[in-house]
Length: 216
Image 1 (cartoon, rainbow, N blue to C red):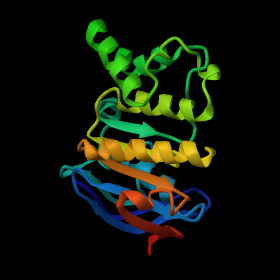
Image 2: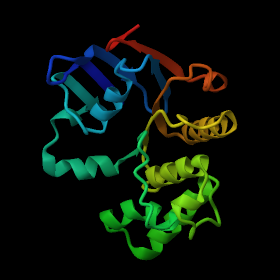
Image 3: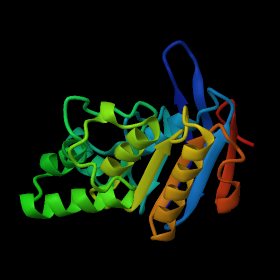
Image 4: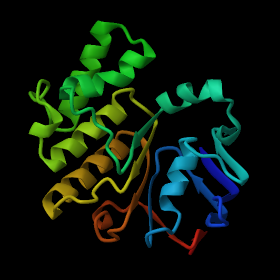
């Protein structure tokens, strides 16, 4: 389903974040990328989301080279995946409901269907009944759940998460790890990064370790 073919990413100044990276991810698989800070983990997700483009190589999804998508096609592609970044990018002047509604408003979903989807997404992440809460009223773990609800409200087949348990205490981190596993159990292809090698140990995903932009 997802294939990285000899992908290299260089930044101005000569830093190489990824070096001839090859990887295949099957539909419905859960893959955990680990490695030291600066190993290239986040770059893998950013290239797949086409937030950046490779210096060399191709990123294929279903046989299509998404790294070569035209600018006009990017909004469509990004709506087809779920993306949870380290910076949650929540809108703190809008309620939990409004934060999750935003992607559906942008894509023009009918209001009744959009409302049902938002409520289902909030319930799915354990935030049922918190529709009117503002992000500042939520704990750190609940804010992360809110960002995940926003990522899944479009019902993506691919879910990407960059350090989704960073800065959470152990209990919240385990809850978030379990949540991602439940998405994978429902058939969603999950690719996430983590510094904590032990956190997903009980979930038996495939693990890939990066060092200096190379697979180990």
